[in-house]
Image 1 (cartoon, rainbow over the protein chains, first blue to last red):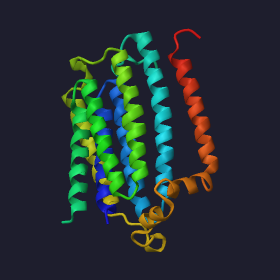
Image 2 (image 1 turned 60 degrees about the vertical axis):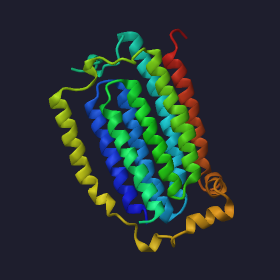
Image 3 (image 1 turned 90 degrees about the vertical axis):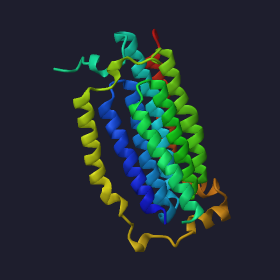
Length: 98
Length: 173
């Protein structure tokens, strides 16, 4: 019954997350926007799980584990970059730019 | 309109508004706090969608652990007061909004998506299963039987993440 609305909310949140990634320059805020996109996908999984059985909820469990690992490693990279460049502004982190 | 739908749309609307605030606030701390609001609202939506255990995990893991990690790093690096350069200029904002809307238009078809009737369970099956096995049991049983190998691989992933975070963040090994 709530499948359609949930998928709509999920799509809106995912689009907002994408816009945030494109809009911001701060690496940490971009990370938060990626977490927002992961959560939007989780919402879609849970909505489908209501109609198709609990497997979708288990996938959400795995997504959360991957998100936690990603946050830990990603923030450690941000920390290391900050120590090197004294900034987290992606405009100034352009070592790989040709 | 039933009470369920009213509560659902209330929290869904709040989630979307908070997500919008999250990407438009200049201060990273404000962004993080608005994101926490979104995550709490999503926890409520999960509970309304017959997944109370996932809702609890959402609060514990996301709002509790991951966002604290974010706030900790923001404060460790002293980024609380962001300069004007955090946001891209008018052109960048326009491109971001345009691409966001384009993505939304593409995803619009998703809202009408419905799984084929052949694989759909009758309404209330998941709720009945949770009545029978308990909220945690309904997830734990398949997790430790059907999904045992992925579950163990997840523990390896977390171990790798822990080691990687220490190696990356430590000044001198």
